[in-house]
Image (cartoon, rainbow, N blue to C red; front, side, top):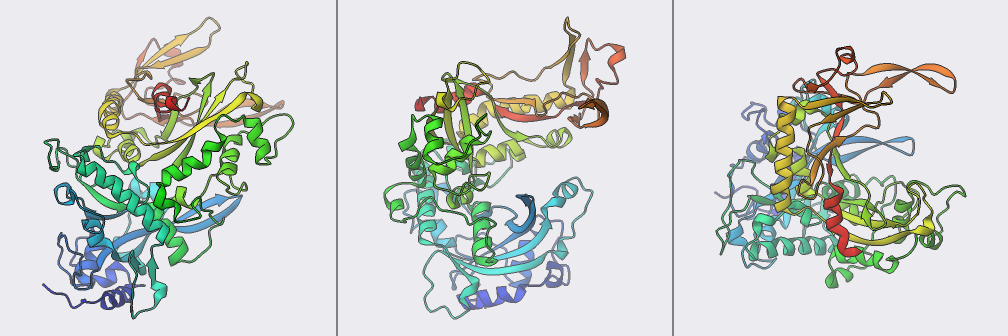
Length: 545
Protein backbone atom coordinates (compact mmCIF):
# COMPACT_ATOMS: atom_id res chain seq x y z
CA UNK A 1 0.00 0.00 0.00
CA UNK A 2 1.58 3.28 -1.02
CA UNK A 3 1.46 6.16 1.43
CA UNK A 4 0.60 9.80 0.81
CA UNK A 5 3.90 10.51 2.62
CA UNK A 6 6.04 9.47 -0.32
CA UNK A 7 8.90 12.00 0.02
CA UNK A 8 11.26 12.88 2.87
CA UNK A 9 9.75 16.37 2.95
CA UNK A 10 6.17 15.13 3.29
CA UNK A 11 7.07 12.74 6.13
CA UNK A 12 9.06 15.39 7.97
CA UNK A 13 6.48 18.15 7.45
CA UNK A 14 3.75 15.91 8.91
CA UNK A 15 6.01 15.01 11.86
CA UNK A 16 6.71 18.69 12.60
CA UNK A 17 2.94 19.36 12.67
CA UNK A 18 2.64 16.95 15.63
CA UNK A 19 5.00 19.00 17.81
CA UNK A 20 3.16 20.51 20.79
CA UNK A 21 0.24 18.08 20.62
CA UNK A 22 -0.49 15.51 23.34
CA UNK A 23 -1.10 11.87 22.41
CA UNK A 24 -4.70 12.29 23.63
CA UNK A 25 -5.21 15.25 21.27
CA UNK A 26 -3.91 13.17 18.36
CA UNK A 27 -5.96 10.07 19.18
CA UNK A 28 -9.03 12.14 19.92
CA UNK A 29 -11.42 9.19 19.46
CA UNK A 30 -9.39 6.97 21.84
CA UNK A 31 -8.93 4.26 19.21
CA UNK A 32 -5.65 3.00 20.74
CA UNK A 33 -5.33 1.06 23.99
CA UNK A 34 -3.62 3.36 26.49
CA UNK A 35 -2.53 0.35 28.60
CA UNK A 36 -0.49 -1.03 25.72
CA UNK A 37 3.28 -0.56 26.15
CA UNK A 38 3.56 0.64 22.55
CA UNK A 39 0.68 3.15 22.90
CA UNK A 40 2.79 6.26 22.02
CA UNK A 41 4.20 4.64 18.87
CA UNK A 42 0.78 3.31 17.85
CA UNK A 43 -0.83 6.76 18.21
CA UNK A 44 1.82 8.49 16.09
CA UNK A 45 2.17 5.79 13.45
CA UNK A 46 -1.40 4.51 13.09
CA UNK A 47 -3.41 7.64 13.92
CA UNK A 48 -1.23 10.63 13.01
CA UNK A 49 0.38 9.07 9.93
CA UNK A 50 -2.56 6.73 9.20
CA UNK A 51 0.05 4.03 8.64
CA UNK A 52 -0.75 0.34 9.29
CA UNK A 53 1.31 -1.57 11.87
CA UNK A 54 3.79 -3.75 10.03
CA UNK A 55 7.11 -5.42 10.52
CA UNK A 56 8.56 -5.34 7.03
CA UNK A 57 12.23 -5.25 6.08
CA UNK A 58 11.53 -1.98 4.24
CA UNK A 59 11.57 1.44 6.00
CA UNK A 60 8.09 2.54 7.21
CA UNK A 61 7.78 4.99 4.29
CA UNK A 62 9.52 3.03 1.52
CA UNK A 63 9.09 5.59 -1.30
CA UNK A 64 10.58 8.30 0.93
CA UNK A 65 13.21 5.90 2.33
CA UNK A 66 12.33 7.02 5.87
CA UNK A 67 11.92 4.87 9.00
CA UNK A 68 9.64 6.24 11.78
CA UNK A 69 10.73 6.02 15.41
CA UNK A 70 8.80 7.33 18.43
CA UNK A 71 10.73 7.53 21.68
CA UNK A 72 10.38 9.13 25.15
CA UNK A 73 12.51 11.82 26.70
CA UNK A 74 12.58 12.51 30.42
CA UNK A 75 13.60 15.42 32.62
CA UNK A 76 16.50 14.87 35.01
CA UNK A 77 17.77 17.17 37.75
CA UNK A 78 21.24 16.60 39.15
CA UNK A 79 23.37 18.42 41.69
CA UNK A 80 26.48 19.63 39.89
CA UNK A 81 28.88 21.43 42.20
CA UNK A 82 26.11 22.36 44.65
CA UNK A 83 23.96 23.74 41.82
CA UNK A 84 20.81 22.05 40.52
CA UNK A 85 21.12 21.39 36.78
CA UNK A 86 18.07 20.19 34.84
CA UNK A 87 18.29 18.65 31.39
CA UNK A 88 16.41 16.33 29.07
CA UNK A 89 17.66 12.77 28.70
CA UNK A 90 16.65 9.90 26.45
CA UNK A 91 14.08 7.80 28.28
CA UNK A 92 15.41 4.56 26.82
CA UNK A 93 17.62 3.13 24.12
CA UNK A 94 16.33 3.61 20.57
CA UNK A 95 15.39 0.12 19.38
CA UNK A 96 15.73 -0.25 15.61
CA UNK A 97 15.02 -3.33 13.49
CA UNK A 98 15.17 -6.97 14.58
CA UNK A 99 18.34 -8.79 13.50
CA UNK A 100 17.61 -11.72 11.22
CA UNK A 101 20.74 -13.83 11.72
CA UNK A 102 20.14 -15.81 8.54
CA UNK A 103 19.50 -12.80 6.29
CA UNK A 104 22.35 -10.71 7.71
CA UNK A 105 24.84 -13.53 7.16
CA UNK A 106 27.71 -12.57 4.85
CA UNK A 107 26.42 -9.07 4.07
CA UNK A 108 28.45 -5.87 3.87
CA UNK A 109 27.49 -2.78 5.88
CA UNK A 110 25.85 -1.16 2.83
CA UNK A 111 23.85 -4.37 2.10
CA UNK A 112 22.74 -4.84 5.72
CA UNK A 113 19.17 -4.49 6.94
CA UNK A 114 20.45 -1.97 9.51
CA UNK A 115 21.64 0.40 6.79
CA UNK A 116 18.73 -0.24 4.44
CA UNK A 117 16.11 0.47 7.09
CA UNK A 118 17.69 3.10 9.33
CA UNK A 119 19.92 5.40 7.30
CA UNK A 120 17.16 8.03 7.48
CA UNK A 121 14.98 8.07 10.62
CA UNK A 122 12.11 10.41 11.44
CA UNK A 123 12.71 10.67 15.18
CA UNK A 124 9.65 11.86 17.13
CA UNK A 125 10.24 12.43 20.83
CA UNK A 126 7.52 12.93 23.41
CA UNK A 127 7.97 14.20 26.97
CA UNK A 128 7.23 11.39 29.40
CA UNK A 129 8.21 12.19 32.99
CA UNK A 130 10.40 13.88 35.53
CA UNK A 131 12.63 10.96 36.61
CA UNK A 132 12.63 12.16 40.21
CA UNK A 133 9.09 10.65 40.28
CA UNK A 134 10.21 7.32 38.81
CA UNK A 135 10.03 5.38 42.08
CA UNK A 136 6.55 6.71 42.86
CA UNK A 137 5.43 5.65 39.39
CA UNK A 138 6.99 2.16 39.53
CA UNK A 139 5.47 1.54 42.98
CA UNK A 140 2.03 2.62 41.71
CA UNK A 141 1.89 5.60 44.09
CA UNK A 142 1.61 7.92 41.08
CA UNK A 143 -0.39 6.85 38.03
CA UNK A 144 0.75 8.33 34.72
CA UNK A 145 -1.77 9.51 32.17
CA UNK A 146 -0.18 8.57 28.84
CA UNK A 147 -2.72 10.64 26.90
CA UNK A 148 -0.99 13.72 28.39
CA UNK A 149 2.44 12.78 26.99
CA UNK A 150 3.29 15.67 24.65
CA UNK A 151 5.31 15.59 21.41
CA UNK A 152 8.30 17.88 21.99
CA UNK A 153 10.56 17.34 18.99
CA UNK A 154 10.55 15.91 15.48
CA UNK A 155 13.93 15.56 13.78
CA UNK A 156 15.22 13.79 10.72
CA UNK A 157 18.16 11.68 11.85
CA UNK A 158 20.37 11.11 8.84
CA UNK A 159 23.41 8.90 8.35
CA UNK A 160 23.71 9.87 4.68
CA UNK A 161 24.20 13.19 2.96
CA UNK A 162 20.87 14.93 2.37
CA UNK A 163 20.98 16.56 -1.03
CA UNK A 164 18.28 18.98 -2.27
CA UNK A 165 16.27 18.71 0.94
CA UNK A 166 13.54 21.32 0.86
CA UNK A 167 12.84 21.82 4.59
CA UNK A 168 14.61 23.74 7.40
CA UNK A 169 17.98 22.14 8.15
CA UNK A 170 17.72 23.01 11.85
CA UNK A 171 15.40 20.02 12.33
CA UNK A 172 17.84 17.65 10.64
CA UNK A 173 20.49 15.83 12.68
CA UNK A 174 23.33 14.65 10.49
CA UNK A 175 25.35 11.95 12.23
CA UNK A 176 28.97 13.08 12.15
CA UNK A 177 31.64 11.27 10.16
CA UNK A 178 33.34 10.25 13.42
CA UNK A 179 30.13 8.81 14.93
CA UNK A 180 29.36 6.98 11.70
CA UNK A 181 32.83 5.38 11.74
CA UNK A 182 32.22 4.12 15.30
CA UNK A 183 28.72 2.86 14.30
CA UNK A 184 30.31 0.97 11.37
CA UNK A 185 32.88 -0.59 13.72
CA UNK A 186 30.04 -1.68 16.02
CA UNK A 187 28.06 -3.15 13.11
CA UNK A 188 31.17 -5.02 11.95
CA UNK A 189 31.65 -6.57 15.39
CA UNK A 190 27.99 -7.74 15.50
CA UNK A 191 28.37 -9.06 11.95
CA UNK A 192 31.50 -11.07 12.89
CA UNK A 193 29.52 -12.92 15.58
CA UNK A 194 26.71 -13.64 13.10
CA UNK A 195 29.07 -14.82 10.34
CA UNK A 196 30.98 -17.14 12.67
CA UNK A 197 27.74 -18.75 13.95
CA UNK A 198 28.14 -17.25 17.44
CA UNK A 199 25.09 -14.96 17.60
CA UNK A 200 24.15 -16.64 20.92
CA UNK A 201 27.20 -14.86 22.41
CA UNK A 202 26.14 -11.37 21.30
CA UNK A 203 25.54 -8.77 24.02
CA UNK A 204 25.00 -5.02 24.11
CA UNK A 205 28.20 -4.52 26.09
CA UNK A 206 30.32 -5.71 23.15
CA UNK A 207 29.84 -2.50 21.20
CA UNK A 208 29.89 1.27 21.66
CA UNK A 209 27.08 3.33 20.03
CA UNK A 210 25.17 0.70 18.05
CA UNK A 211 24.10 -2.23 20.23
CA UNK A 212 22.48 -5.62 19.77
CA UNK A 213 19.80 -5.45 22.48
CA UNK A 214 17.57 -8.34 23.55
CA UNK A 215 14.30 -8.25 21.68
CA UNK A 216 12.14 -10.82 23.39
CA UNK A 217 11.88 -11.90 27.00
CA UNK A 218 9.78 -14.99 26.38
CA UNK A 219 11.61 -17.96 27.83
CA UNK A 220 12.50 -20.37 25.06
CA UNK A 221 12.03 -17.77 22.29
CA UNK A 222 15.12 -18.39 20.17
CA UNK A 223 16.17 -17.61 16.61
CA UNK A 224 17.93 -19.85 14.08
CA UNK A 225 21.42 -19.11 12.83
CA UNK A 226 23.17 -20.21 9.64
CA UNK A 227 25.51 -23.23 9.61
CA UNK A 228 24.91 -24.12 13.26
CA UNK A 229 22.14 -25.74 15.29
CA UNK A 230 22.87 -23.54 18.30
CA UNK A 231 19.84 -21.25 18.80
CA UNK A 232 20.41 -17.57 19.67
CA UNK A 233 18.35 -15.07 21.63
CA UNK A 234 16.40 -12.67 19.40
CA UNK A 235 18.13 -9.28 19.31
CA UNK A 236 17.58 -5.95 17.57
CA UNK A 237 19.94 -3.22 16.46
CA UNK A 238 19.66 -0.26 18.83
CA UNK A 239 21.28 3.08 19.53
CA UNK A 240 22.33 3.34 23.17
CA UNK A 241 20.36 5.84 25.24
CA UNK A 242 23.42 7.98 26.09
CA UNK A 243 24.21 8.24 22.36
CA UNK A 244 20.68 9.62 21.86
CA UNK A 245 21.26 11.90 24.91
CA UNK A 246 24.18 13.57 23.18
CA UNK A 247 22.06 14.14 20.08
CA UNK A 248 19.29 15.68 22.21
CA UNK A 249 21.63 18.02 24.06
CA UNK A 250 23.93 19.00 21.20
CA UNK A 251 21.64 19.10 18.19
CA UNK A 252 18.04 19.33 19.33
CA UNK A 253 17.95 21.56 22.38
CA UNK A 254 21.28 23.14 21.54
CA UNK A 255 21.94 23.82 25.20
CA UNK A 256 25.52 23.65 26.32
CA UNK A 257 26.57 20.96 28.71
CA UNK A 258 27.35 22.09 32.23
CA UNK A 259 30.90 21.17 31.25
CA UNK A 260 32.12 21.28 27.66
CA UNK A 261 32.64 17.60 26.97
CA UNK A 262 36.03 16.81 25.48
CA UNK A 263 36.75 14.20 22.85
CA UNK A 264 39.37 11.48 23.07
CA UNK A 265 39.47 10.98 19.28
CA UNK A 266 40.41 14.33 17.78
CA UNK A 267 41.16 13.06 14.28
CA UNK A 268 38.57 10.90 12.45
CA UNK A 269 41.26 9.23 10.29
CA UNK A 270 42.51 7.47 13.44
CA UNK A 271 39.28 5.41 13.39
CA UNK A 272 40.23 4.11 9.94
CA UNK A 273 43.24 2.34 11.45
CA UNK A 274 42.06 1.38 14.95
CA UNK A 275 38.86 0.61 16.82
CA UNK A 276 37.60 3.08 19.43
CA UNK A 277 38.69 0.67 22.20
CA UNK A 278 42.20 0.35 20.75
CA UNK A 279 42.49 4.15 20.53
CA UNK A 280 41.37 4.66 24.16
CA UNK A 281 43.71 1.92 25.48
CA UNK A 282 46.60 3.40 23.42
CA UNK A 283 46.23 6.63 25.42
CA UNK A 284 47.07 4.66 28.58
CA UNK A 285 49.90 2.40 27.35
CA UNK A 286 52.72 5.00 27.63
CA UNK A 287 52.06 5.15 31.38
CA UNK A 288 52.07 1.41 32.16
CA UNK A 289 54.44 0.63 35.03
CA UNK A 290 54.65 4.22 36.27
CA UNK A 291 54.36 5.06 39.97
CA UNK A 292 51.36 7.00 41.21
CA UNK A 293 53.80 9.67 42.46
CA UNK A 294 55.32 10.07 38.95
CA UNK A 295 51.87 10.41 37.41
CA UNK A 296 50.84 12.99 40.02
CA UNK A 297 53.92 15.03 39.11
CA UNK A 298 53.53 14.54 35.34
CA UNK A 299 49.95 15.86 35.29
CA UNK A 300 50.56 18.62 37.84
CA UNK A 301 47.94 17.24 40.25
CA UNK A 302 47.84 19.17 43.52
CA UNK A 303 47.91 16.90 46.57
CA UNK A 304 48.04 17.83 50.23
CA UNK A 305 51.21 17.15 52.22
CA UNK A 306 49.57 14.82 54.71
CA UNK A 307 47.63 12.41 52.48
CA UNK A 308 46.72 11.64 48.88
CA UNK A 309 43.11 12.52 47.89
CA UNK A 310 40.65 9.61 47.77
CA UNK A 311 39.87 10.18 44.08
CA UNK A 312 43.55 10.40 43.04
CA UNK A 313 43.23 7.57 40.49
CA UNK A 314 40.32 9.37 38.81
CA UNK A 315 42.43 12.54 38.64
CA UNK A 316 45.28 10.58 37.04
CA UNK A 317 42.92 8.98 34.50
CA UNK A 318 41.61 12.42 33.53
CA UNK A 319 45.20 13.61 33.14
CA UNK A 320 46.06 10.66 30.87
CA UNK A 321 42.98 11.25 28.69
CA UNK A 322 43.66 15.00 28.61
CA UNK A 323 40.26 15.83 30.14
CA UNK A 324 39.35 18.70 32.47
CA UNK A 325 40.36 18.08 36.07
CA UNK A 326 37.51 20.25 37.36
CA UNK A 327 34.91 17.46 37.55
CA UNK A 328 34.81 14.40 39.76
CA UNK A 329 33.69 12.15 36.94
CA UNK A 330 35.77 11.14 33.96
CA UNK A 331 33.71 12.53 31.09
CA UNK A 332 34.65 12.33 27.46
CA UNK A 333 32.25 12.37 24.53
CA UNK A 334 33.05 8.79 23.46
CA UNK A 335 32.91 7.39 27.03
CA UNK A 336 29.52 9.09 27.57
CA UNK A 337 27.93 7.97 24.31
CA UNK A 338 29.15 4.38 24.58
CA UNK A 339 27.97 4.19 28.23
CA UNK A 340 31.41 2.95 29.30
CA UNK A 341 31.89 2.55 33.06
CA UNK A 342 35.39 3.31 34.29
CA UNK A 343 36.31 1.10 37.20
CA UNK A 344 39.55 1.17 39.17
CA UNK A 345 40.73 -2.31 40.18
CA UNK A 346 43.09 -2.06 43.18
CA UNK A 347 45.49 -4.94 43.78
CA UNK A 348 47.62 -5.51 46.86
CA UNK A 349 51.01 -7.10 46.15
CA UNK A 350 49.57 -8.41 42.88
CA UNK A 351 46.56 -10.04 44.56
CA UNK A 352 42.88 -8.99 44.30
CA UNK A 353 42.01 -6.57 47.08
CA UNK A 354 38.22 -6.20 47.10
CA UNK A 355 34.99 -7.47 45.59
CA UNK A 356 33.45 -5.45 42.79
CA UNK A 357 30.12 -3.78 43.61
CA UNK A 358 28.09 -3.08 40.49
CA UNK A 359 24.49 -2.54 41.60
CA UNK A 360 22.58 -1.59 44.72
CA UNK A 361 19.20 -3.21 45.43
CA UNK A 362 16.47 -0.58 45.90
CA UNK A 363 13.99 -3.07 47.37
CA UNK A 364 13.89 -6.79 48.23
CA UNK A 365 10.13 -6.72 47.50
CA UNK A 366 10.77 -5.56 43.91
CA UNK A 367 13.66 -8.01 43.49
CA UNK A 368 11.59 -11.10 44.28
CA UNK A 369 8.96 -10.03 41.72
CA UNK A 370 11.48 -9.91 38.86
CA UNK A 371 11.96 -12.77 36.44
CA UNK A 372 15.56 -13.49 35.42
CA UNK A 373 15.02 -12.34 31.81
CA UNK A 374 13.55 -9.01 32.98
CA UNK A 375 15.88 -8.56 35.94
CA UNK A 376 17.98 -5.46 36.50
CA UNK A 377 21.08 -7.66 36.93
CA UNK A 378 20.61 -9.37 33.55
CA UNK A 379 19.89 -6.10 31.76
CA UNK A 380 22.88 -4.34 33.36
CA UNK A 381 25.45 -7.07 32.67
CA UNK A 382 24.22 -7.62 29.11
CA UNK A 383 24.46 -3.87 28.42
CA UNK A 384 27.54 -2.80 30.32
CA UNK A 385 31.03 -2.24 28.99
CA UNK A 386 33.75 -1.53 31.55
CA UNK A 387 37.14 0.10 31.19
CA UNK A 388 39.15 -1.56 33.96
CA UNK A 389 42.13 0.44 35.23
CA UNK A 390 44.49 -1.58 37.42
CA UNK A 391 46.69 -0.16 40.19
CA UNK A 392 49.01 -2.39 42.25
CA UNK A 393 49.77 -1.38 45.85
CA UNK A 394 53.18 -2.45 47.23
CA UNK A 395 52.98 -0.49 50.50
CA UNK A 396 54.18 -2.58 53.46
CA UNK A 397 51.33 -1.55 55.76
CA UNK A 398 47.74 -2.21 54.71
CA UNK A 399 46.47 1.32 55.32
CA UNK A 400 49.51 3.09 53.95
CA UNK A 401 48.79 5.11 50.80
CA UNK A 402 52.31 6.20 49.80
CA UNK A 403 52.07 6.99 46.04
CA UNK A 404 55.74 5.96 45.65
CA UNK A 405 54.67 2.34 46.17
CA UNK A 406 51.53 2.25 44.00
CA UNK A 407 52.04 1.31 40.34
CA UNK A 408 49.68 1.86 37.38
CA UNK A 409 49.53 -1.61 35.81
CA UNK A 410 47.33 -1.04 32.75
CA UNK A 411 43.92 -0.60 31.13
CA UNK A 412 41.55 -3.10 29.59
CA UNK A 413 38.05 -3.06 28.11
CA UNK A 414 35.82 -5.81 29.45
CA UNK A 415 32.20 -6.85 29.28
CA UNK A 416 30.82 -9.99 30.83
CA UNK A 417 30.62 -12.86 28.32
CA UNK A 418 27.12 -14.26 27.75
CA UNK A 419 28.09 -17.80 28.93
CA UNK A 420 28.99 -16.29 32.33
CA UNK A 421 25.73 -14.29 32.49
CA UNK A 422 23.57 -17.25 31.43
CA UNK A 423 25.60 -19.69 33.54
CA UNK A 424 26.91 -18.90 37.06
CA UNK A 425 25.32 -15.43 37.36
CA UNK A 426 21.84 -16.71 36.50
CA UNK A 427 22.28 -19.72 38.82
CA UNK A 428 23.35 -17.62 41.83
CA UNK A 429 20.72 -14.93 41.15
CA UNK A 430 17.90 -17.51 41.07
CA UNK A 431 19.20 -19.26 44.21
CA UNK A 432 19.46 -16.05 46.25
CA UNK A 433 16.09 -14.68 45.10
CA UNK A 434 14.53 -18.01 46.12
CA UNK A 435 16.09 -17.68 49.62
CA UNK A 436 14.59 -14.20 50.00
CA UNK A 437 11.19 -15.47 48.83
CA UNK A 438 11.17 -18.37 51.31
CA UNK A 439 12.94 -16.67 54.24
CA UNK A 440 16.67 -15.99 54.47
CA UNK A 441 18.49 -17.89 57.24
CA UNK A 442 20.12 -15.62 59.85
CA UNK A 443 22.40 -17.03 62.56
CA UNK A 444 22.95 -15.02 65.76
CA UNK A 445 26.33 -15.42 67.51
CA UNK A 446 27.99 -13.58 70.39
CA UNK A 447 31.76 -13.53 70.82
CA UNK A 448 33.70 -13.40 74.12
CA UNK A 449 33.69 -9.56 74.10
CA UNK A 450 29.88 -9.58 73.86
CA UNK A 451 30.09 -8.43 70.22
CA UNK A 452 27.19 -9.67 68.10
CA UNK A 453 27.67 -11.19 64.67
CA UNK A 454 24.90 -12.19 62.24
CA UNK A 455 25.67 -14.69 59.49
CA UNK A 456 23.33 -15.35 56.55
CA UNK A 457 23.04 -18.31 54.18
CA UNK A 458 23.82 -16.39 50.98
CA UNK A 459 26.43 -18.02 48.73
CA UNK A 460 30.03 -17.15 49.62
CA UNK A 461 32.23 -15.53 46.94
CA UNK A 462 34.45 -17.73 44.78
CA UNK A 463 35.70 -18.09 41.23
CA UNK A 464 32.79 -20.45 40.44
CA UNK A 465 30.08 -18.42 42.21
CA UNK A 466 30.96 -15.09 40.67
CA UNK A 467 27.82 -13.17 41.67
CA UNK A 468 27.20 -12.40 45.31
CA UNK A 469 24.81 -10.59 47.63
CA UNK A 470 26.76 -8.53 50.14
CA UNK A 471 25.89 -5.70 52.54
CA UNK A 472 25.48 -2.22 51.09
CA UNK A 473 25.76 -0.35 54.40
CA UNK A 474 28.69 0.34 56.72
CA UNK A 475 26.64 -0.42 59.83
CA UNK A 476 24.51 -3.57 59.99
CA UNK A 477 20.82 -3.19 60.92
CA UNK A 478 18.10 -5.80 61.40
CA UNK A 479 15.13 -3.59 62.33
CA UNK A 480 13.20 -0.84 60.57
CA UNK A 481 14.41 2.78 60.49
CA UNK A 482 14.92 4.18 64.00
CA UNK A 483 16.69 6.96 65.94
CA UNK A 484 19.71 5.89 67.96
CA UNK A 485 21.09 7.89 70.91
CA UNK A 486 24.73 8.82 70.22
CA UNK A 487 27.26 11.18 71.76
CA UNK A 488 29.21 13.27 69.26
CA UNK A 489 31.89 15.69 70.53
CA UNK A 490 30.47 15.30 74.02
CA UNK A 491 26.96 16.34 72.95
CA UNK A 492 24.13 13.75 73.11
CA UNK A 493 22.00 13.63 69.96
CA UNK A 494 19.77 11.31 67.98
CA UNK A 495 21.11 9.68 64.81
CA UNK A 496 18.80 8.29 62.11
CA UNK A 497 19.62 4.64 61.40
CA UNK A 498 18.35 3.75 57.94
CA UNK A 499 20.52 0.80 56.88
CA UNK A 500 17.88 -1.89 56.50
CA UNK A 501 15.25 -3.08 54.02
CA UNK A 502 11.98 -4.93 54.49
CA UNK A 503 12.14 -8.64 53.71
CA UNK A 504 9.50 -10.25 51.46
CA UNK A 505 9.26 -13.24 53.85
CA UNK A 506 10.12 -13.44 57.58
CA UNK A 507 13.74 -14.48 58.20
CA UNK A 508 14.52 -17.88 59.73
CA UNK A 509 16.50 -16.97 62.86
CA UNK A 510 18.92 -19.42 64.47
CA UNK A 511 20.07 -18.94 68.12
CA UNK A 512 18.48 -15.48 68.47
CA UNK A 513 17.74 -14.77 72.18
CA UNK A 514 14.16 -13.78 73.00
CA UNK A 515 15.47 -10.52 74.52
CA UNK A 516 17.00 -9.45 71.17
CA UNK A 517 13.79 -9.68 69.11
CA UNK A 518 13.35 -5.91 68.92
CA UNK A 519 16.87 -5.23 67.60
CA UNK A 520 16.94 -8.31 65.39
CA UNK A 521 13.46 -8.44 63.91
CA UNK A 522 11.96 -11.07 61.59
CA UNK A 523 11.12 -8.82 58.68
CA UNK A 524 14.16 -6.52 58.21
CA UNK A 525 17.73 -7.07 57.07
CA UNK A 526 20.78 -4.90 56.31
CA UNK A 527 20.62 -3.34 52.80
CA UNK A 528 22.35 -5.53 50.23
CA UNK A 529 23.95 -4.98 46.81
CA UNK A 530 25.03 -7.21 43.93
CA UNK A 531 28.80 -7.71 43.69
CA UNK A 532 31.19 -9.74 41.52
CA UNK A 533 33.77 -11.80 43.37
CA UNK A 534 37.32 -10.41 43.47
CA UNK A 535 38.62 -13.81 42.32
CA UNK A 536 36.55 -13.52 39.13
CA UNK A 537 37.61 -9.91 38.44
CA UNK A 538 41.25 -10.92 38.98
CA UNK A 539 40.87 -13.55 36.23
CA UNK A 540 39.78 -10.77 33.82
CA UNK A 541 42.84 -8.55 34.44
CA UNK A 542 45.66 -10.98 35.31
CA UNK A 543 46.99 -10.87 31.72
CA UNK A 544 47.96 -7.22 32.37
CA UNK A 545 50.33 -8.20 35.19
